[in-house]
Image (cartoon, rainbow, N blue to C red; front, side):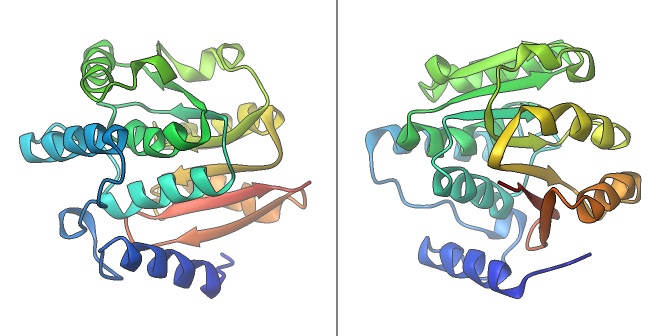
Amino acid sequence: MRRLATFGLALAMASSAFGQRPGARGSDAALPLAKTEAEKKILSVLEEMASAGRTYLSVPVSDGRALRLLTEAVGAKSVAEIGTSTGYSGLWFCLALEKTGGKLVTFEIDAGRAATARKHFDRACVEQIVSVVEGDAHAKPAAVEGPIDVAFIDADKEGYLDCLKQLVPLVRPGGLILAHNVTMAAVQGYVKAVTTDPDLETIFYTEGGGLGVTLKKR
């Protein structure tokens, strides 16, 4: 795996600027301070979800910060997420999309979790920029209209490689493909694919749950 130390340092510095100490993981990481009323609403729901234990299989705060930072940095207008769960990572994307004027399409195979995610999006007042697609994302690639600026994969680990193959043609040149839990054995086929394809450039951020950051080259 290729790792660029400067990327990890940049994210650590960004986290520190928001009040998170470098190396903090999961519940040890602090939420950022709200600058606007829209941010305040989203952050309050994120905090409520964590306090109530409604973050089933979700990213830790440190990775949520990275998702928000990367999405806002590329000025994303279109984000596709494979694996909504209860909407926790989706709300981190919304923190960026409120600034960029973009929208999120997120896939969830479990009807109960999809319903819970919709409630969280409603409570955070971001329902107008989020579309929750219920069902198997492997069978519904056409539900996402390209070009995609940022794609995030955090669903069944054995399906990462299939998701990659379906998403790459939809991601614009210069767009990002993000993948969670890249240190797990089940996703090593995905890791090999994104590190051996000459059309992709990949680095790994390991402060939280292990985040692969792949650039689709221009």
